[in-house]
Length: 196
View: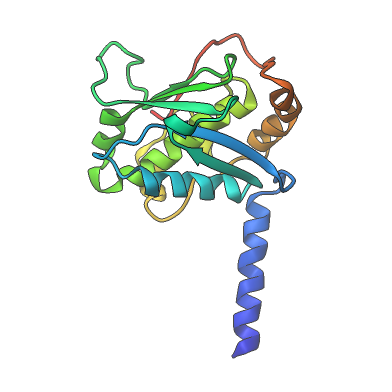
């Protein structure tokens, strides 16, 4: 019986490794500051977003606004989004500026009130990835799709949407620039909307 359990663990571990073929080297830490908002369960969303990046070899370090280190990413939460503000988007990032992310919490919670922390975790991971890539890149599948469909939202209920190998390669290429200061060179768009 122990042999079967050990074999199952090894197979599961192999699947996890296969899901992140281009993981970063351990030690890539990203500081993120986000205000506390008592009406939303931000702790769970932060933990889940951290888990998404952990499997890619990246550690998110969360801070509150009062203790935000210099160079940290800054996430603003909007509770009443004007209709004409980035129509259809759940959030946007400024990858060329390299610091700011805006999340439309009213739109995120409207997707599925019971699943708001899981959806928010994916939205945060998606937009943080734009900043780490330094561009407005979107993938045909997974976490970095430009428009998530109903099937993607259902998948979020029991698992995390994965990075593609290209997603991780773009982060890897941009890492030296981020460590020296933002120096994006990917596309001509100034904002990266996603997670619609």
